[in-house]
Length: 117
Image (cartoon, rainbow, N blue to C red):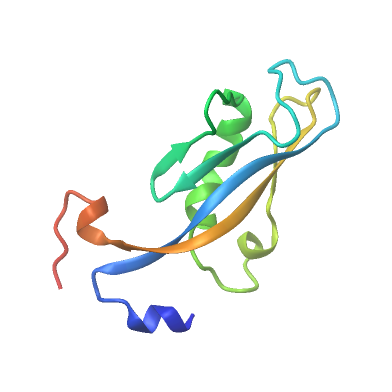
């Protein structure tokens, strides 16, 4: 965490994330395929051009993403666990959350409430 020492008081770090379909062990009726993915950079979600992503699979990842973007204690399960499943028990779709680049954000660029020291 050496980099944090060089940050200004109004800055913080977040990882960019890629969520990729790793395995489908059942019948996925949303036509998802292994390798399908979406990206999270800061607070913005994006997908490759012409890509689709199942709403139900997506919603199962949403609660975990803000924590996966941040550095946590090394023993925290969010540091060691990276797989999420679709809530459809017949689909058996498994996604993996990968951390990519670590970026620096400025508080005032992401919040309407101005930073006060």
